[in-house]
Length: 209
Length: 178
Image 1 (tube, each protein chain N blue to C red):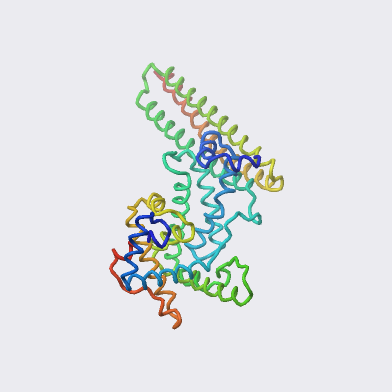
Image 2 (image 1 turned 30 degrees about the horizontal axis):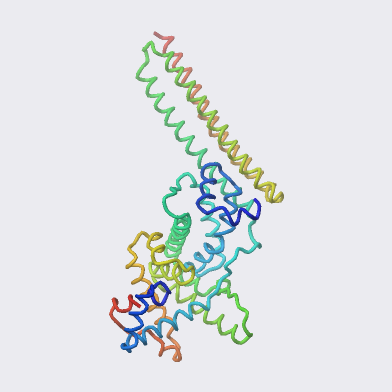
């Protein structure tokens, strides 16, 4: 597939070709565009980079295997986020049954991979914080975790998240607020962070912010 | 949340900022939220696809295997269902002189089966060719895997076809005992 294709073919057009013609080039284009964000979603939902990559691969395989089921009424990405998120939920279910939650938190391999160009000290401090974030995110209930990851890390609009999850936009906003509040409490265990805990406030006020 | 995540429009922003000017509780909430958001942002991951792991060719190929297995499975199930129906039909119509039309149905099922398999093979071959152009090494492993799948699917079809053949001869037997 030529380079021009990367810029001129929309996701929806590419998916159409995959669906109608089993077009491997169009599929490759979609993988090229979406593999990183999907990997990142899975990595943050599971707290584990390797598992995140595995699940991402499964998500794309599933996308191709179920291409006939794709209905082109919404955005392609909405469909893909949903496929990936469902796989994450399934994986989290499996872990619960096997009581693997603690393993994920402690595993050396799972420590937060950080992309950083700062000075060594700053980079070290960031890596430590990043790993605290990784562990804290795992403690967040899944319904809050998914909203926070989609909003804060993947930058989806509130409306897009609402479509992915099939819930009202207002619910997305209140879950985001609640997720942030819980994260601040989870991260605020060290004394110098305590001052930055989000104060208790009425939900409606907080949501509006 | 709309303000914090940059989704407030001009008028919403104006009214929220006006509120914040007069409300200390909200101001400290915003400050706390921003602090947490900053901490969250320390966990960065690459935004662009990195070319270390599986090349795309292996993807399309792996997914295509899945697809073929799924399709093969679906067609097998349809054929088995048809075979069951025909078997029931034969039992009901033992002695019926419309055995000829039953044979015709059996022939049609077998023909449909053949057509379906052929078009699946073509679709898959097309996707595979393009994948091959990109990564020859992966193709070799893939080829072996595909052959395994093809053999398994083939075995499945063959057993169904022999059931159809058996059914046809049952039908013949029934008609000859009249």
